[in-house]
Image 1 (tube, rainbow, N blue to C red):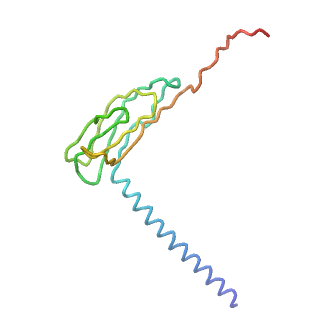
Image 2 (cartoon, rainbow, N blue to C red):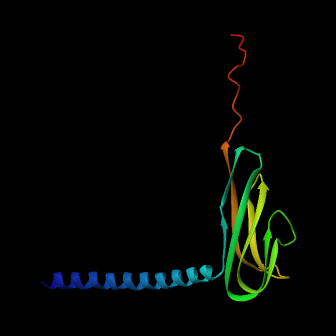
Image 3 (cartoon, rainbow, N blue to C red):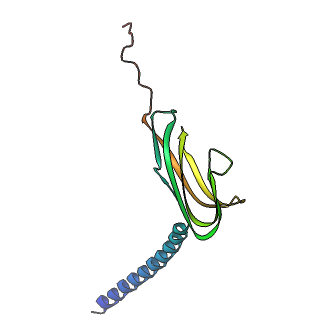
Length: 142
């Protein structure tokens, strides 16, 4: 009977320790999730599809963002150095524009006149045909 109670007690201690470690990890994960949710940049759609590889695709993007605190923010693209649009004393905004690209475009929300990235998102490029298909009408000598 002593062995059963000591084994049971050890199991309870192990479960308690696991719960405490799990609770600690859970709180840490929630706090980091809260940080990323307060500053958010979403693009729709997030994928652009072209017919062949290295061929430009065309997409009408809707970008929406929000932050925890109002400030002067600017939206940037990896395709150009100048901002796409800036907002004054805002904590949210929407921007729509047509883009043409043959590779992944990255978008950044930054503080005005600063290189601090507040939020980021990417437009991935995908292709219907990845390789050039060989002509089925090729000549053969043998």
